Each structure stands twice: as structure tokens, then as C-alpha cells.
Amino acid sequence: MTDIQILQQPFVLPCGQRLENRLCKAAMGENLATPEGAPSPGLFTLYDRWSRSGAGLLITGNVMIDWRALGSQDNVIIEDDTHLSLLSQWAQTAQQNGAACWMQLNHPGRQAPRAFNREAVAPSAVPLEPKAIFHTPRPLKEEEIIDIVDRFGNAASVAQQAGFSGIQIHAAHGYLISQFLSPHTNRREDKWGGNTSGRARFLLEIFRDIRQKTSADFPISIKINSADFQRGGFTEEASLEVIRLLSGEGVDLLEISGGTYEKAAMMGHAQKESTRQREAYFSEFIVKARQATSIPLMLTGGFRSIEAMADALRRDELDIIGLARPFARNPQVAKELLEGKITSYPVPPVRVGIPAIDRRGLLDTIWHTLQLQRMGAGKDPKPEMSGWAALWLVVKQMLFGSIPKK
Image (cartoon, rainbow, N blue to C red; front, side, top):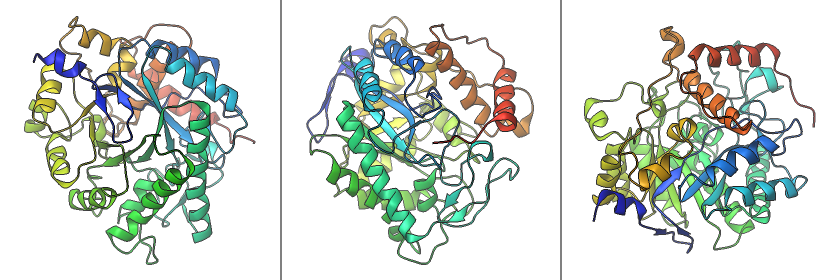
């Protein structure tokens, strides 16, 4: 079987849903919501384009579950079915050409910028640098934790009603669930902390609540860190323990990533030479995860060539290949790979030459978000765009962003 034929193979999830091939557009923040937190026409334009990308699966960017907790300006927010018709239009647009589309659900926790949040909450009061940008978080009370669990479940129910073909729980990259999993940010001594199983309780309760509020054939995916790559943080050993805890819960797909926006491993910073040779940033961990669980696995970060993608599938290390930034630069990248028009798609890093800014990874994220917004406006991506444009957007949002009014 050729490399391309391997990528073209369909995959059937445990719940019975069939993905038409092994390529997934992984989540990227679109920041294309209306001031009311609803999907905008720009979001429909973007997903109309991605619906023709050739990917078997599209995962949306962050959809927030609470007006009071936003990871960035212009997030889609679901607290109830107020915007159900617009959410349905989003789902229909994304899936009109045969791709499945899953909604990613998230809560930022302490990664909630001051510019558009009145406060931040977290498992414990561990500040996030720089303090000029982020609030020192307030520790969550138990009744608030239970409320957030309920919000995740309600948002997933709305997503299914709207016609999305699945959801993904974002438990990686330093957001709230990731904060609960990490001993660096979760210093609680109650049942929501204390040890790995206690710190995993929040994620497990969210999964179970979503499972109760959606049908059995509705896929639930989880995105989890291999590690935080921070001293005193979430380790590979803890991640494997959490993966084992999830194994009996009926998870349909586990996406492996890593890092936080303090230590941006998901952007490819400081990778080992052996990792660079295999392309995928977390390729060594995925082998360990495969041995620890029977949950289908997806790996996102670093894959650029058909050869490396097919080799990982041949070795049965994973089931789905996640690509993110290539889709921001070339919305047809999956189609071109699957048709053999290209054999690889390199993605150069975005830099401005200031090490303190470049190594955080935020600038790279914002630059690619700008490409998504160009496509939402009906334009083509602009790969030659300077990193300074992204930096200016960060500064503008921090200086002139506003806290939304519900």
C-alpha cells in the first residue's frame, strides 16, 4: 500500500462514526464570533472553504462555555440554545462536502486576559506571567466546579442539537482542565486535587456529564498534554496515568499534544533532534500512550510530509494525523496531499527577532489566526505577512480590548 493510500483509508470510531480518511484539521482559534458570541458570516465563509479541504475531520477552534471566562476576544460562546440556528448553519456549512465537524469546548481558567475578563478562576491562586496581562486567578469553590462541569455538558448537548457530528474537550495547553491536571497549578487538598486521580476528577466528571447529555453514537474526543514541560507540572507519567483512567470511559478519540503558552512545546520549540527527524513533536510519547490504552489516538504537531504521516500509521502508533498551521496557510493542503499534488508542506516559524516574544509561541498563534480571518473575509492566506502584524494585534487587543456585556 502506498503512502497516499494509507492516508486515504477510512477510520471507524468506537461509537460507529466513520471518518473518510486519516487527516484532520486540528483546532485553531478563529476569533470570528459576533459581539454576542454567535458564529459570524466570516466563520461560515472560512468553514465553507475548509469543507472542500479534503480532510476527513474538522475540529473547530475554542468554543467557550461561560461569558465570564474568555480565552480571547471574539470567541463563540454557548451557554444555552440562543444561537442554535446560527450554530446549525456553521455545522451544515462545515459538513456539506462529507467531512465530519466536531466542536471544541473550552474554559480558559487563569489564561483569561484582563482586557476582556473581569476576573480569572483556576483550581488554585497560581498567577500567570505576565501579570500585567493576566489576572491572578481566584480559586474555584466546589459549587463553581460543579457548575462548570454542567456547562460543558449543556454546551455539548447544544452542539449535537445544532448538527455537529461530535465534540472535543480541550484538556491541554494550560487551559482550565489542564490546570486541574497539573500539580503546578492545582494545589488543592480536597477531592479535586491531592494526587493524579484527584486532579483528573474534573476531566472525568466533565466527560461523564457530556456522555449523559448526548447520544451514545455522538463522538466525544479529548485533547490532552503529553506533558506541560514545566518544572513541577504535568509529567508524561501523570499523563499516562490519566489516559489509563480514561480508558474505561468510552472516549472515541484522544488527541495528544503538549505544552502551555508559558512553555509552547505545541509550537515546536526546543524539540530534540530525534523528534525533528520523525517530524511529529510528541512522537515518542504516542508510542507509550498506544501501549497504555485502546482508545484511538490522534497526534497533532509537526507532521509535514506524507512519508512521515504514513510511516506513523504503518507502525500503528496512531490512527489520525492532526494538522493545524498548514490549513491556515493552504486551506486545500489535505486535498493536495491526498491527491499526490504535493508530498510535504513545510511551515516556517513566525518571528520578529525578539527572543522573549518569539519563544512564547503566542505570536505564532496570532499570526495564523490572522490568516484564518483573511479567509473569513473571502481572501486568500498571505504567507509573506510580517510577524509584526501579529504583534500589533496582540498589543491592540491588550490595550483596547473590552469586556463583553451579555
